[in-house]
Length: 128
Image (cartoon, rainbow, N blue to C red; front, side):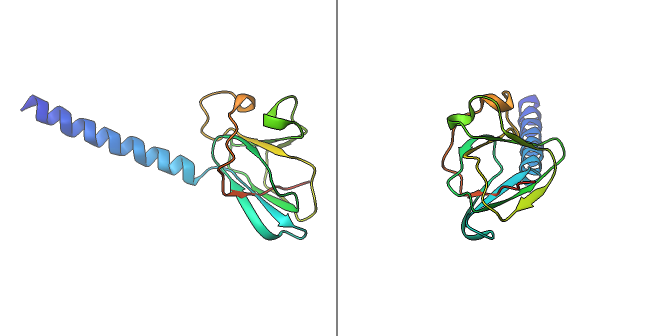
C-alpha cells in the first residue's frame, strides 16, 4: 500500500515538473532571421539553449522575455567577446554582420560556453 502511494506521488511530481519546463520553453526569448532584405524569404528561429550559426543576414527580430538575453558574435562557435547583446525586443529588416548567436535560455552552464547546434529551424535578429 505504501509503495502504491509513493508511485502515485512520483507520477504527480513528474507531471508538475514537465508542466513547469513546458511553460519556461513557451516563454523563452526568440531570435528570428530572414534570408532576404526587408525580412523576406526563408527564415530561421532560435529560442533554445545553445550557440547557433546564423545562415541568413537579411533581417532579424528578437522577442525578449525577461531575464533571457541573446549575445551576437562574429567569431565561430560563439568564441571571444560578443559584439552585441540583446536585452530588449528589437527588429531590423536590414542586413547585419553577426554570424553566431548564443541563446542562454534554460541553459545550465554559462551563456558564453554553450554548444553549437545547427539543427535550429528559425532565427530572427534585430539591429538597433
